[in-house]
Image (cartoon, rainbow, N blue to C red; front, top):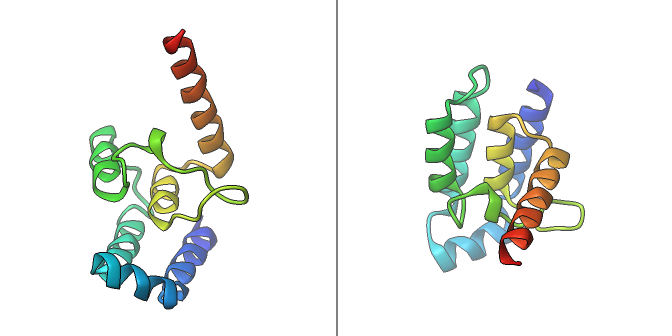
Length: 113
């Protein structure tokens, strides 16, 4: 997990490029958000968050406030440091996230019928 954490932190730092500048211009404060992600990764490096903390993190970090509504990850989906940070904190792999998304979709379709 330490290597994965190190890679995520390095990637977050690398993304302080043109894309970040565009986001900062459009939304303001992107660098501060990335610093917060790094801070959260360090905080939960050796500590698993409680369910209450996970819900709070989802609302704080994610566009829609819930992992079920997040965009799909790489390689076929969007790159999202907020989602990837949350997945790392809660210990979910990309595969587990994809399975969760599929299950949510199945439940939704059953509910709609």
